[in-house]
Every structure is written in structure tokens, then in C-alpha cells.
Image 1 (cartoon, helix red, strand yellow):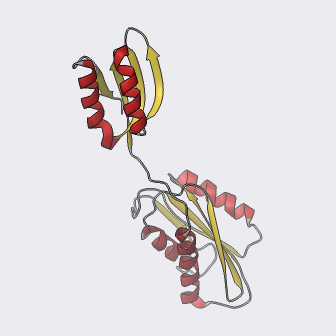
Image 2 (cartoon, helix red, strand yellow):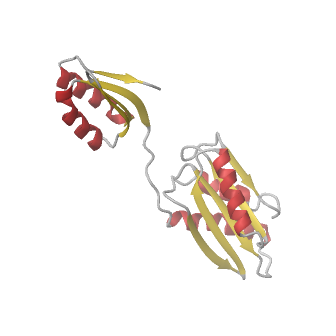
Length: 198
């Protein structure tokens, strides 16, 4: 997924194409981003868009618009480019300032798809980690070892409670859950627990 908002631009036969991409984990976030970019470039000839609010290549939650360009010349080529990239949870707006030369249907499709491709080539991304929320209960002597493991696993500690035992709620990467369960069992001689919350 995109690490942050990113922009690329090029000029094709006098028309300026500005491609802006950002993260979109759902339709609401995608539409808010599209509206914001469209307001920023309100004087543009067109603000065409496409989004994929899911894993790379997933067509479960998608959207697109030619925004006044001939049908099928902007939104579909942009969406196809996003779907065939290795990036998920992404929205793109290609802003066009008309330069006086008509590009034709094929030229428009290539320009809009090319704008998205250009932005993707330099897009800073981050790996999406699937985490599960867990409640961990251990005795005090196990806490230091447990915290080291959670830090190494890139878990996100959400809550800590200190009573007769230490109770921690954390988001743990799915790939590290089995290791966490083994560690807690070893550190506490089976007296500790790891409980899934979601």
C-alpha cells in the first residue's frame, strides 16, 4: 500500500497529466481523496480516477470514472493498471489540462494508464502486516522477555494492566502468534495465557 500521498506528472502533446495517488483502505477514504484532489485542481479539464480498496489485484471493492473523457478512455485503463500492480489499498486521480491537440481514444487510454504507471514507479510503499489482537497474561518475572519478543515481532502494545499478574493487549502479526504462544508457555511453565480477542 502507499506509504504516503505521491504525485508524478508528464506532458503529452501539449496536455499536462498530473497523477496523484494515496492510500484507500475503503470506498469512503477513496472518495474523500478524489474529492480533495478534484477541488485542488478544480480548473483542470478533467479529474479522472480509479481505486482498489483491498489487496493487490482484488476486484471486490473497486471504482473508476472517466470524468467527462470519452467512455472507457480514462477510468478503465487507470483501474487496469492499478489491478495489475503489486500495490493494494490505493486510489489514483489523473488530472488533465488540455493542451490543444486531441489524442484520440487510444492515445487517451495510453496517457491515463501511463500516468498511473509513472506514479507507481516512484511510489513509496509499505508492507501491509496482518495483525491479530490478543490478551496476554503472565507473571511479573516473564515481562521483560515478553516485551523483547513483542518488540522484535513488531507487535503493537495497546494496553497494559499490572495487578496480581501482568495483562497486555497487543496487535501481533499473524505469522508470530504461534511463537508467542510457545514463548508464554515456556516463560510461565504453562501458567500464562494468550487469548485471541477478534
